[in-house]
Length: 134
Image (cartoon, rainbow, N blue to C red):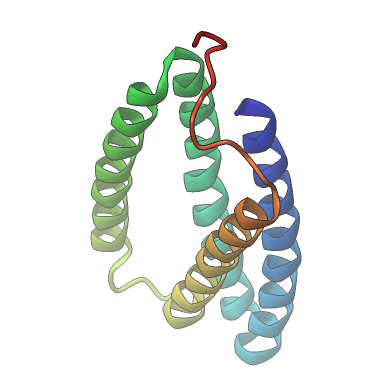
């Protein structure tokens, strides 16, 4: 299970990095330096959030399947709270383009999620852990 998780994560990271590079270039072209900063912040947000997921879910997977679900739920709530606080604190700032920040983050999240789904479908993995006992 961990080997498939590592392969899926690797492919997702590569695809998301390519999409992020394109979004940074497009945002810089559209919004200038404010667009560039917004796009870089959007990419950083996605990278940090999914990086936290990779580490926490990877460690929880060593414990057991129930721990993965618990870790996922806790991480989801944590990230929603952090995102709400960040949006509240950054409200009204003018040093970056907020629309390009949000658009870049959404596109990167969709790229990550789509690559996770497509890669999971391509890799044939067992959904039941065989224990060897009959």
